[in-house]
Image (cartoon, rainbow, N blue to C red; front, side, top):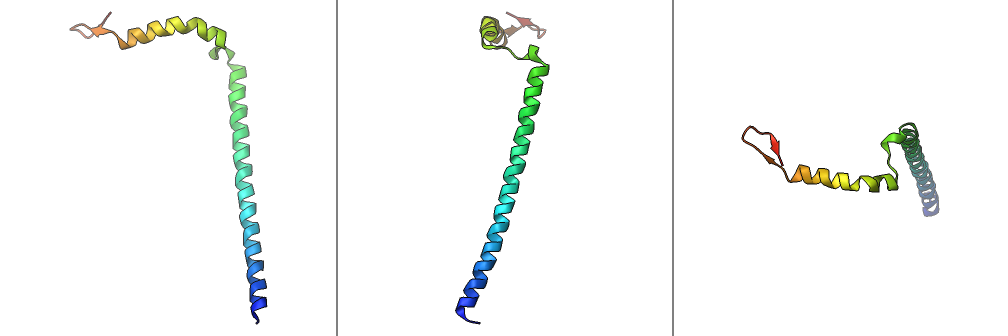
Amino acid sequence: MELREYINLLMAVIGVLMSLVGFLFWRILHRIEDKLEELHRLAHNCRESLPIRFLGRKEFDGYQSDIDKLWYAVNYHQHDQAGRVTR
């Protein structure tokens, strides 16, 4: 065999391997896309089926003072000798 034939054979093998790598990479991307679509669908269905659990921005702002009071109570409280919370 001549050098040209070896180079042609090597190029053919490299082409087949690159095609295989490209196919496997496409398959991985396709599976990731399917998983992301499923995650989006599940999250969207949860949001539609349980709208009471999700607050809009206006509702959240209305609760901010209550949240601040709660965090203050959690972070700045004391205990008596029996272990009960005193404020």
